[in-house]
Image: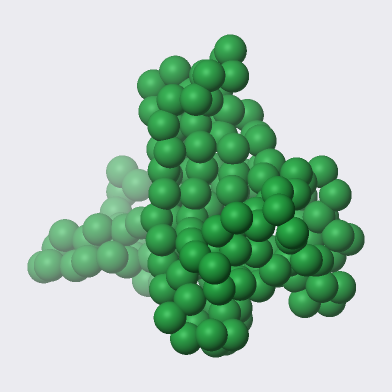
Length: 173
């Protein structure tokens, strides 16, 4: 990407190289340009191990009758869920995503994290139900822990009786 900053005396070459490599143009008007980090460089620290999903979800608590389908994923519902606690920092924005498939039109999945304080006491929930499609798709929501939260309990589940097939989960900051 050619930046209007190139060749400007007070802009260093390393800064120009950084902007060219790690940002993309969001908006431009006359001599003004607004750049933002490219999505692949935002939320670059993963809190969950992606290898777990292909090896039966070890380390995840199973509630109800979660079915693990080798090569496909975990079949979850409202009452059949996978749960994993992770350490979080307040004031940090986290990107939670599920790669999911729903066989029945009208099925709803949920992007949910329950927040707890240092003593393990529940503070609140971040929850967003989403309609799920009969094709593999990644569903994403950004969440921020409330004041005092030190743990996020990641919930992998549907939001009703219809099953949701989930093959991967990500929580990044």
